[in-house]
Length: 171
Image 1 (cartoon, rainbow, N blue to C red):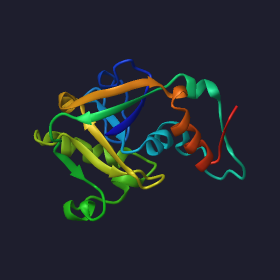
Image 2: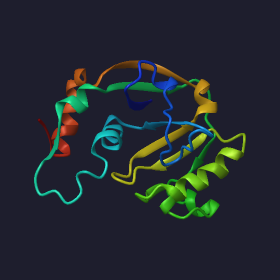
Image 3: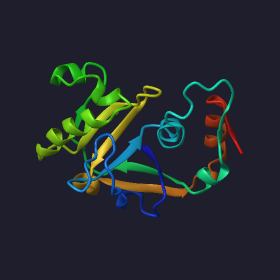
Image 4: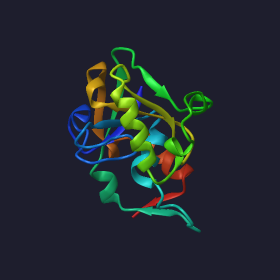
C-alpha cells in the first residue's frame, strides 16, 4: 500500500508535464508513491521549506485543501531499481541520485534505468526522512490500482498525527 497526494481524480492518470527527481518529461512520466502517509505528506507539502526554521512550519489550509490522498496497491509485481541501503553501491550509483536536493543527476540515472525496458521504476529513500518511496514509470502504471482516494482534509487522524509530529501549524 502506498500514498499519493494528488490534484487529480484518478491519481494514476496524472504523471504531470514536468521533470522531477526520476521523471524526464516529455520522454516519460513518473508517479511518485510514499510507503506511508507521513512520507507522502513530507514529500508533497513540507519538502525543504522547513529548513532553518526555529518554530512551527506554517502551511496554509488552502494548500492542504486542494489535495486528495490516494492509497495505491500493486496488482502485479513491479521490477524496481533499488537505491535503498547497499542498492546504490551494488550498481555504482552515487548517493546523490536518491538524496541530493539538486535532481539533475537523478534524472540522468533515471534515463538509463528507463532505457532498460524491464525496469518499472525506482525504490529509493526519502532524502528528508529516510522512509521508502517509489517512482513508477508511466509504462508500468497498469500494474497498480487505486484502492481509495479522497480529500486530504478528511483524513483527520493521519493528518493530525503528522502535523503534530512534524511541528506543522495550519493557518
